Image (cartoon, rainbow, N blue to C red):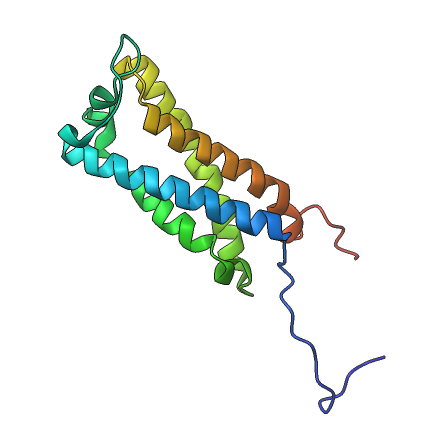
Length: 159
């Protein structure tokens, strides 16, 4: 049956995902945003940092290092939080959904570089940075689970 101009056509987003994915990505993004805000504040005001110091954990050493001059985490999580709001998840614009997944992949690559920088270059790790790394990884896992199907990747072109 074909529709005519007189018949109403239900307009529904083809980019729907499970509610659990929408909720978990928003919560993870808000956690990442909170941690990134805290790390940005302590980058400029190291005295505000609350972190134990031992031979391997030294947040101040990490957050005041040359590698922490790149404030990617804050910018990343401002954008990622916006992309994981219910409004963005329900958007009909494909580029929003592609951008969300792409940003998660790029962010994880950056996290891998940061882990290298902490362990090899700086010689210390930061608990809060590790929290951001884990949140980024969790976001990538959730988005890897839902984004390919959401975007139609892997579906047969004939269907």
